[in-house]
Amino acid sequence: MAKQPEALATFAAAARGDGKKPDKIGLEATPETKALPTDPKLKTDAATKVLREGVLHKDQGADEAIDKLPDRTRDL
Image (cartoon, rainbow, N blue to C red; front, side, top):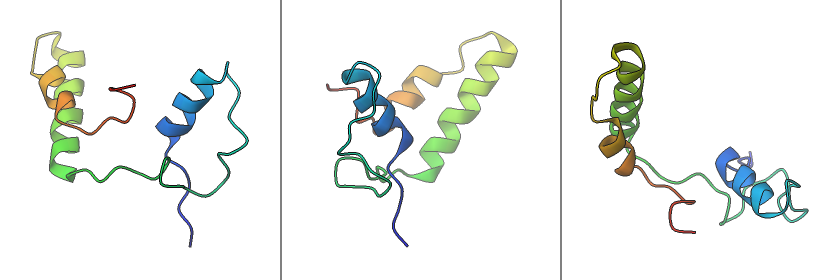
């Protein structure tokens, strides 16, 4: 079964294309739109810290945890 394009890659491409998803992004992932391999522990840590900051309204290190995750839009 073919994988779908990563949503963030699709949104980023649409943002660069004046809000319209480029025709080249179809229903199957390409090397440009495939999911980025990520350690699940890093994702869990970042999500937990983001949620804790939202509830506690205190710095829990979410920004640093998020920076450890791969981000295809960070270097554009």
